[in-house]
Image 1 (cartoon, rainbow, N blue to C red):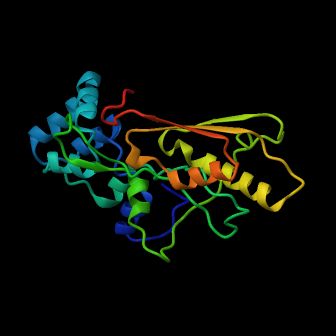
Image 2 (cartoon, rainbow, N blue to C red; image 1 turned 135 degrees about the vertical axis):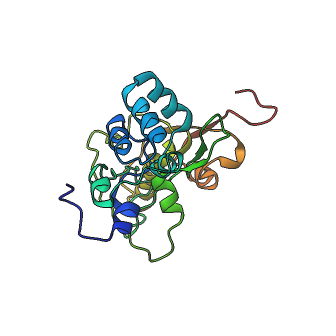
Image 3 (cartoon, rainbow, N blue to C red; image 1 turned 180 degrees about the vertical axis):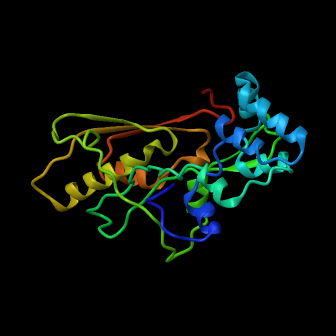
Amino acid sequence: PHERLPVCSLRTLLTRFMDITTPPTRQLLTYLASCCSDKADEERLLMLANESSVYEDWRYWKLPHLLEVLEEFPSCRPPAAVFVAQLNALQPRFYPISSSPRKYSKEIHLTVAIVTYRAEDGEGAEHYGVCSNYLANLQPDDKIFLFVRSAPSFHMSKDPTRPVILIGPGTGIAPFRSFWQEWDHIKSEMVDCKIPKVWLFFGCRTKNVDLYRDEKEEMVQKGVLDRVFLALSREENIPK
């Protein structure tokens, strides 16, 4: 059913290509109910599948991935081939590039927050962001699947006389790092070219997660960034 996926083992299919972390749809729960040997498991799954409010409450409270669903309903034993056919392919995650090709011609830098969270008001099982944790666990020389997608409507100002204000809370600062690296290159290497006046507004919870602090300070000293403003939302003794 997934014609664009390669021929591979079931393990590879589930660990690399299929979406097994998104809470299952009501349609998938209906199928899983048909695979239960225990009547109570079947009836419970059918109730979740058929009653919208019950399903939404269960989904919101537990945020269950497929393994947790199979653990909650242990008599559900779907045939592997049919089960996989019910799943959706894992969708790509898009991250802005946070480096200038002029400064890092053979590299692409990403600024990624590693996502972890618990359902059930913080009392449930720990869940992990799929792509952020995958990237965090990579080792040097590991190969990954990626592609570069252009964003023609999001780009640096081409008019050096027009002042620029950049606002990037958290990892939203990512593309602006590529901007200031580009302006730094223009300022230092292209003597006849000018760069605009730039103010950067950055927000985070506490000072210890002030991303690229040293690099931003360097850009201010070099005159690439004119002003940098820092907003802290959880720092002790500092109001939001």
